[in-house]
Amino acid sequence: MADQVTVDPQALTASSGVAKTLAEEVVQPVKDALTSATTAAGQLTGWSIAAGLGKLGTDWAAPLDALKKRLTDTGTNLQASATAHAHNEQATADAWKQPQKAAQ
View (cartoon, rainbow, N blue to C red):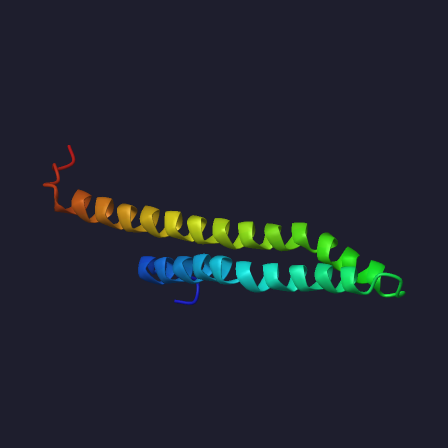
């Protein structure tokens, strides 16, 4: 059936791990790039591009921090969704194991 929706908690958990790993792995390269831009700006004092490089180093810090936070939050939310779906599946299975009373 084309309208059927299925959720794979293991896939959500794996995706959560990927998002959290990306959030951590992006930190150092971003920090290095921002430091390099700021350092280069300092070394090029008097050159027309110095201000632009300095601005690059400072202006990109907040958006890149926001990216890290968003990746981390996405990982956390995916894990919460996986946990909720797994719990729901178990609760549904447990409910079906209970003896059913006849309708009166």
